[in-house]
Image 1 (tube, helix red, strand yellow):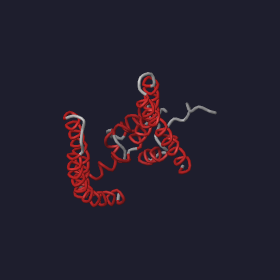
Image 2: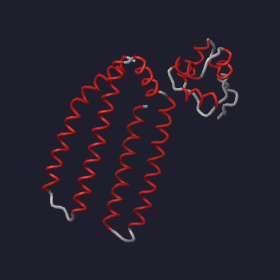
Image 3: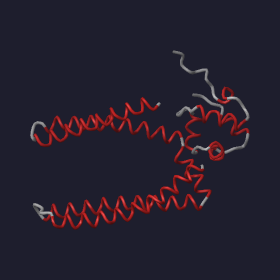
Image 4: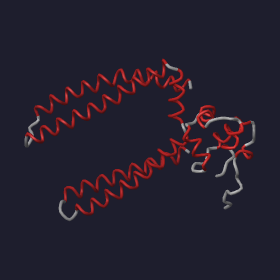
Length: 150
Length: 68
């Protein structure tokens, strides 16, 4: 439990760096994006919306994480409940199973999409093929890592 | 895997939530272990058995385990 508390102390410190950093990055990206020529107003708006959405997602995630860590340090009951929730073995088992299943399904869908795209667009086909190889490589690296670890 | 957790819980007048809290897992995990949907790890099996003051074999039924 002490390690769990220390993990959240560290999380507060990291959040203190990351939250302003994301804000700074967003402002810089917005300025850069404003000066980048786009093909149409629609694309410009789309990119702006996408960036703002992503920024809100990251900022929101880290803010929630900060609030949670502060609560962990202040409230012992909440700390115990969160500790049980985060270390629950069945939850971890479900996460592992769903993660492995997701990668397999993702690869099948990507390969199928690549096959279909090969009939009408070379660019899309090679992009999807690249993603399939990248995911396969990542899976292989992780499998080797965990084989060595356990 | 079959277990005697539900009976032991009733005997000790404990809710799933109380047992879960005592052994450091969620209520859903206790439900899944009781219904046989999830097999507890050795660590959790030990904690549950120790909580009731019994051995692992007295709480968990290994008779239906497949022999290789």
